[in-house]
Length: 636
Image 1 (cartoon, rainbow, N blue to C red):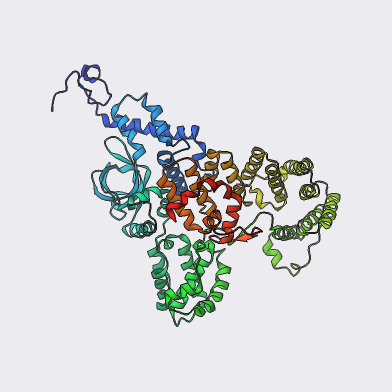
Image 2 (cartoon, rainbow, N blue to C red):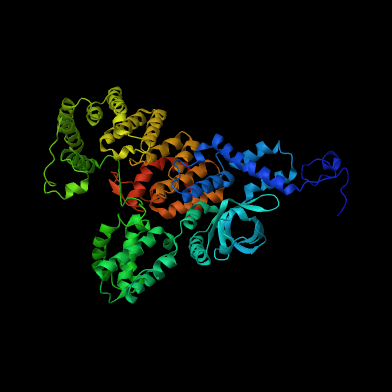
C-alpha cells in the first residue's frame, strides 16, 4: 500500500490533513461506515426540513395501510428531490445549500450532493454480492449499482423469483440505497408494467427516451407498480368456457394497452365473470360480447375515464354491426349496474356526471325525507325501510323543524319569486334557526350590505350548531344531511364576497369549506383555482392541487399547465403539460381562441372530455389565458 504523506488528505474522509487527523495514531478508521451514518442523519434532517418549510408537500390524510405509507413517503421524497418550487429551485437544493456550509467530511458532501440527481427507475437484479449487498442494473438507463441489501424486503431464497425493483436509488457513499425501500416484482409483472409505460411513451412527444418519460411521470407510474394485481394468476382461477375466454382474449387484443393498466379494466373482467356465472349467456359470436364490453368500458366514465367512443367505431374494430352492440349493451348494462357499486374489486372513481353545485336539492330532499322516515319508524337502516310496506307512503314531518326544512327545499325548487318568499317566511316562522331560510332571504334584496348580513347570520347559526353534527375526528360533515345547508350558506357567503370584490374574504370562506368538507363534494376547488391565480397565490394553489393528487380532470390538467407557464418554468415542461391537457379536452382551446362561441347559458351537467365540460372551465378560467394563448402554438 502506498504510504500516506503527512500533508496528504486523511484517508478517513474527514477532509483534514493526515498529520492533523489519524497521523497522530497511525490508525485509520474505514470511512464508509462514518459516511453511511452521516447520510442516514441527513435523510432524517431533510424530512424535518421539508416539514418545517414546505408542509404543503406532506399528505393531507393519514395512511391506512403499509402500501399507502410507502406511497406517501415516495411522493414526498420525489417532490422534495426533483420538483421545482415557486422560485425555480427544488427543496433539496435549498436544503443542501444550507447544510453544505457546516459539512466536514468531503465524502459525505460528495454523496449528498448527488441526491438531487438520483435515479427513480426500475432495476434488474444481476447478482448477489454478499448478505449485505447485491448488484443491480437500471433496466431503462443502463448502468450497474452496488446496492444495500437491507432495503430490499425479500428473503435470500426469493431474490431470483422477484428480480425487478422499482424505487428511488440514492448514493450512500461506497454503495447505493433504495429510499425508502425497493419494491420487488416478478419478470411477468415487469413486462406487464413496462408495456403500459411504453404505450404511454409512444403516444406522447416531449420525452425522447423511455427512461426520461418514466422519470417525468414517476408519481403516476409508481402506484401502478405498488398496487399491481397478479393478473395472470387471478385470471387462471376463473372458470370460464372456451367461448367466454375468447371474449376476454378479443378484448385484450383490441383495448388500448394503456387502458389495460387501469384497475378498472380488471374490474370489467370481473363483471364479465359474474355475468357468465349467473347468466350463462349463449355466445354464438364472441366478438359481439367483446365489442359490447369495450363500448361499456369507455362509455362509463367511472370505468374507462370517459373516452369518447361510438358504437359504430367500436363495431368496426371487431368487424361486427353496430346493431349487435346495441342489442347486447342494454342486457349487460342492466346486470352491471346492480353489481358495479358493490363489486369487491371496484374502487370508487369519478361520478358518472358532474352536476353543478346547488342543483341537486331534489336529491338532497329525498335523502333527508328517507332519513327522517328511518328515525320515525325506528328502523335500524334504510334497507329495513325498503322491506316495509309503508316505504312508499308520503313523508310527514314529525315536528316544526322538519316541516321548516321541507318548506326551505320547496323554496329552492320554485322559480316563482313571490312563492319563494312565502315559503321562506313559513320556514322561518316554524324554525327561526333554519339555515336555508336565513340564507335565502338574501335573494329578496338588491342591497349588498343586507345580503351579507342575512347570509352571515345563516353561517353563524351553522357554526353554533356544528357540535350537533360533528361526532368525532373521523366525522364527514357532508354525510350529515342536516349539515348541508350550513355548507351551502358558506359557499353563498364566498360568492357574495366575490361579487363585492373582496377576493381575500372569498378565499377565506372557500378555504373554510375545504377544511369542513375535505372531499370537496361541493366543487369548491373550482372556485378557488382562478382566485388563487388572480391573486398570484401560487404556493396556495399548489397546496390545493396536492390535496387531490389522484384527480385527472381537464380543470386540473390545464391549471398545472398554466401554473408552469406563470412561474416561467422550463418551456418544454409546460408544453408537455399543455399538450396533455389539450388531449384531455380539445374544446377548451377552441373556446379560448374564439373558434367556438360560448353558449348563452351554462350547462347544468357535463361528462369528461365534452364540449359542455370545456364551457364550464372556460367560463371560470378563460380570462386567465388571454395573454398566454401563444403557448398553444407548438401543440396545434
